[in-house]
Length: 167
Image (spheres, rainbow, N blue to C red):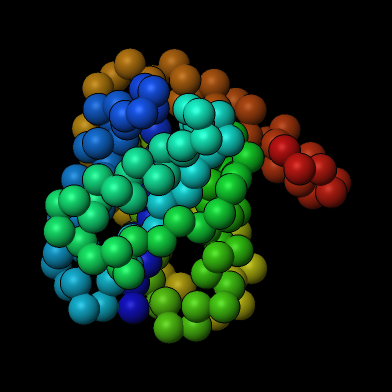
């Protein structure tokens, strides 16, 4: 079985923004390639909340509205407010899912290298072999500066995790 990890992005009040919508659409397309052997995982971020509703809950509702069965769309848990936290939550959620042998990461093209790197770094914690595949969506070039800054901060975050810190 494969798990399709659709990472969150922008969140506007009670709606997801265009970047997250593109990611959800791509996740649905991957799911429809083999619906009997797939599930979609969405991960909510603490900073993506509006009156108790997370982006992941809105993403899940939208994915279900496009024909994916409720049982096939899972929310992995509450995370820190960053990509590393989302992936750590998804990895933890998959630890007891022995039937999952592939993870398809769905995100923006600029975001995918960091997602792939983090998934490959953390997947050994799952405890069984998992293949990693990526599916990218074009989300404009506006987040080029943000993505560059995120790569620069990554060694600091990984060092803190190695020392037992949360972030």
